[in-house]
Length: 325
View 1 (spheres, one colour):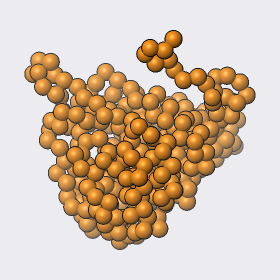
View 2 (cartoon, helix red, strand yellow):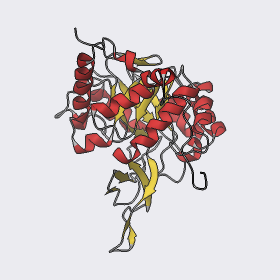
View 3 (cartoon, helix red, strand yellow):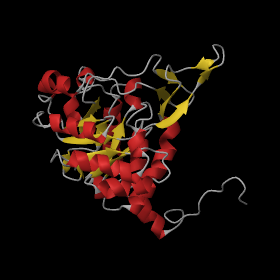
View 4 (tube, one colour):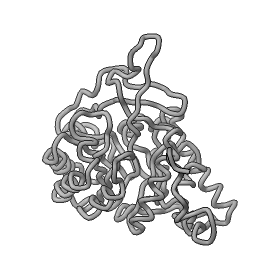
């Protein structure tokens, strides 16, 4: 019997849990020659702003030993261009499309959401309050619960679509931000954005990125984000999570599901292999067959349940910090 891979992120129903992450698949259409879009659970398009944003100066990408640095700076042609020029073609694809949105003010976030009401057939919106590569907006809103909640409330008033919020990984109170945005109207959480980081070219004696600092993605951040999924799923057990951070293989995806995510995002891996999402999906199917898993949702949070049965698991000791014995 074929395993049932369907899952849900609140009111957003997905045929399978593999989602293409915002910013790494363009508008999705660019990948279509290599990856039949209808085979993934959903496509999240790059973040949209009210007006066109030019993005950050080049270079915008730099490889590191464990991942990829980027400082694209949310370059995009603006929401009107998306609605009038891109959406008519994208909506013909038989795949749920999640539109990511960003802004400099909460009013701008709300205005983008309002314009997206004209894109009939969108599956959901994802509020990006956590981009580390912009001077205004982004982490400005994602760092404090009250600021994050204000953005979500403003967007919620403009849309009835399922609403995801993309969290930042290194705020002082990530669980507090998560709780605040859910109380403000979010249906699900994307955990999480890239990690602020940088790299320096010692020969040129300057930062490798044109913006000096950027966001780190890829395998290096997977343990950090996995821990965040674990913590938020414990604190908010009824809130659906889309786990996103360094997932390259089916085993990576399984870790996120077992930690409590209901779906997984594929990001940097797509830049290395445009068919990476399908490889992950095939690996999940194979795993379910080998382990007689009939529904993939049986795996969601299973590591926590196993933790309750015996160590190690939920309630483990905090790791030692400098100065602690």
